[in-house]
Length: 299
Image (tube, rainbow, N blue to C red; front, top):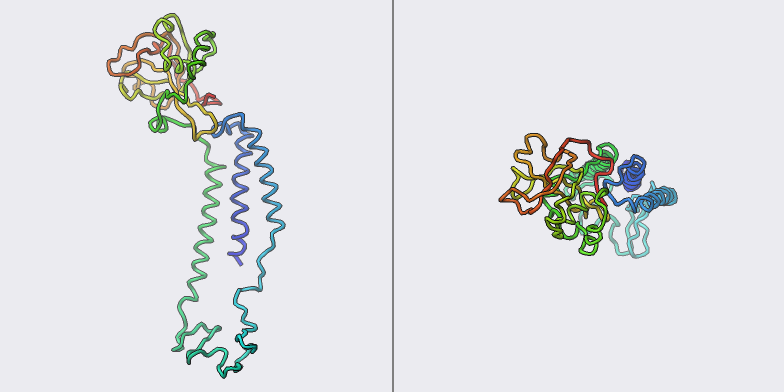
């Protein structure tokens, strides 16, 4: 009975946990840690529709018949028109429960020598094990989605992806528009795009910037150069790509730990580092720790 109940509820519970998690993330403003804001309304509406369909499907699905154990012992048909409901002899002269001289005891589950079969206790134990595993999976899923707070992507993900790659930054035509634009509202992505597309020292000579992001080291010169970085999300966190503005500051890690959030402001200049691949860096006039923003990603 427990197995039947769990088999009906496990799919419903797992589905409802996911649906509640989506609605909860949207209500608390944390859904943006997983998907692009343009998909918020669509995702929430589809989650609500899914919730209604899951509940409706559970309500209309027929239950398993309690009296059907799949064996049909009340009336064995010997295949020759003889109903062997009891210890009858079929038309071919054979006892319906005696084949080739071997006893066939359904009730006692005994073998031909009269020994009780040991497998009768295995099935209940196996069912109990899988029932416990089902409960554990549902509990872990609920804890992961509803209890553990969602985390933003960090340097661990940066190490797996290419910082300032061509997919994350603006293309040539978009960069040309940036060159002609007011820099007051530029994001980390905008400055990283200009550096990636080679705007040049002449462009950066009289420019100042203020950027906020998390600290991640320059792989070529981690002791002297770090990036003020953010992740660019196109669709969801799975396709997020890191972008960053390089900052030259020897021994920076003594004051600003990796993955801590900072706000840096200042001008640009040639990179004094002989190891870093970045030709231009931000020379911070001010650099201060800050809290992670409500929307840590850029779009």
